[in-house]
Image (tube, rainbow, N blue to C red; front, side):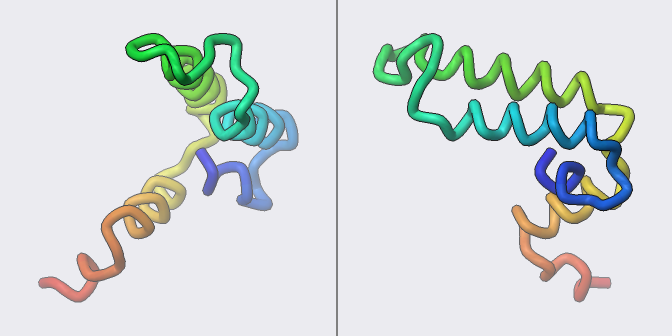
Length: 80
């Protein structure tokens, strides 16, 4: 979602949804406090899933590859 949001080719409405969802995810103010074990992160997860669904048509293979490289490192490219 982040790589889609920072891409200059992504429409402004999609950037707004992506940044809004990501901001809610990292915000300490939640609808359901994160301290509630088992329920605390359900609202965060719901907002991220809804955001991804809303902008799924804007997320490209390039965005997925950038995220994969960030999460797993660029070591994969060096392997045959």
